[in-house]
Image (cartoon, rainbow, N blue to C red):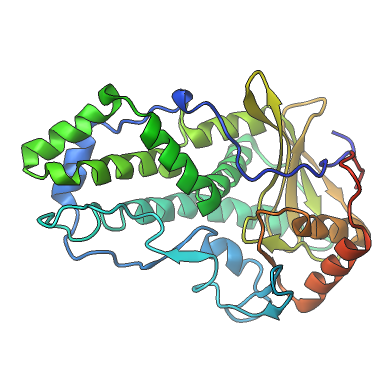
Length: 339
């Protein structure tokens, strides 16, 4: 891939033909969920679109990060438990006053599933971060870890409200009666046909956020990433990577009537990041140690992405340097630049 980096045409929504994404969870699985889940309502009101374990990697001390609000320009220090979250983000309304689980059809079903995925992502991100601490010897990332990193990136895209909400709506609107009949039949058999749309929405949510297999939204992204060359980037001891309320910076191009990833950047920790792009080989390759100015330039890219509101770092200096660089280098029309 060399040192060529992203153009500036960032696009947070990796859109695809919704007809490629199968909708239906098996009826038996839905029935099991209906009969086995507790009826006490959501345990987790604040549902994170940026995982807490990931944000904790950017804590300077305690359980807080430094965050810069691009709208106000202010810098503040939120707790990771309260930051990058929305109330009941992944819940689906039952719209049935007699639904025995209450307001939501399957309380915490998706949230608990995301926690299971995060338990697989966290160790590999920690291993990559450990490889990139100053003066640490670097060993290549194995194929299994490379796939998990790509899966983490895909999940970070899919679960963000600016992607998840419109895509879920689009999938629901495009669904055929054949797609939806298992949900309708199940709810009719249970005497809760009024909850049919909520149950169908929950199935779509689960498909988007928890399924990484072939034919799924995340599976399509993972497949694109694994066809590219990936490189681990290391920050020097005098600089740190920032992240954001939308950590991933994808560059998308339209090919054959659908969007395809051209390149993508995502920080892993203050010391480590990954970048994907065209190159002579597929998969996660080597590691590149960046200069401090290169790191600042990457951090400043978040100020150019209109889908990012909050830029996040372990210290105030990292944010202020990135903002200063962005203000001093307001982009002219898009062009390829090297890091």
